[in-house]
Image (spheres, rainbow, N blue to C red):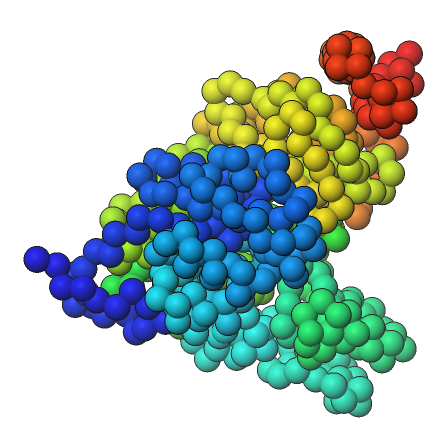
Length: 519
């Protein structure tokens, strides 16, 4: 007989815990691509999935794919996907016994994790205490430094006195980086090149941090020139076992948002991988981590690495790790939440081949990545050996202004990096979508760029190497595909007897492009 241990993820891990708490029903506190990803995992594991949806998501894929779906409010996130009381009420009414937060929204909110536990539910993620410890950037820096994990030189605490900030900046040397203590994603972040710009940057960073996170604390650190952004996936169970699943290279970024990710990194040597993996495990151990998490590092040209932050959730780019390890991270998240032990030791984890992920967003890359909204037409994702598409949309789905513009992730696996790049190029060329502009041309540009192909790039790649005019014009095949999509759209409009005004509004930009660039 199993002895039932606490299912409260905030409780201290017990090495004597021998129970298994069977999770039978999961509330998915998210939407879109990640909600679909979790629903599929639930189905594979024989677990009932319960989705929530806002007014804007009434007809969304995740709403219809789940075993049950519940309306939670208007499109605004704070009145729906960020409303803790509504989410917990749905969990109660639907008789759920666990909550998966996905990524974004409340996934790194310690109060939400604690509220889930207080409601007697299993939070499929880390303990609230770990989220809290690593969510505060200054506290996390202090903790990592105490445990011997390298951190970028800078202040230990938040800083508000301009004179003190100037003294610190003089000591560590310009350029310096101002960062929000309570957030990430580039919000409240400023690079300061010279002393004359420091005061204004402090004020604007604090204001932006207050608006984004409700917390205007900022701190200073040395700005590492031309670093690479390399992160390590970790997994930990409630029995004290913790491993890493290798690194992901995430240096292709635009405005601090990752665009292309891959595993392994072409920059990381076996010796560096061993040292960084050891530091990642040490970081997870230091905060009492349980479940899946990511330790992010900056790596300079000398291959010296520094702790950047920890993401206490599943990452958007987790598929590249799954492709090279063969490990389903969502399955493992659920199994760990049930109290199971990790099924392997560090030395048993194997890596095979190379994987690349391209985030596909509804943005106009020829117009400074301006958001593109509308109805998706003629949606035909790429297929074939080594290609994986994770999305939350289909033909007829609406891309709105309310949520993140990423509508899909395209992942290519190859026997080596060269093979993975070749497969990604083919997959991007094969991808068909009409109705909205996408970042596919930009991703294709990256795959062709000689510095990317050689693995010779840093996080300033987009700023230094990309211009909209560098994008290739549509190929003959793309023109034919666009013309076909336009013809299909025209045929459907005729068949459906759409009023003239509505048909004009629904005219595809692909159709327009086909008429222009392909003329």
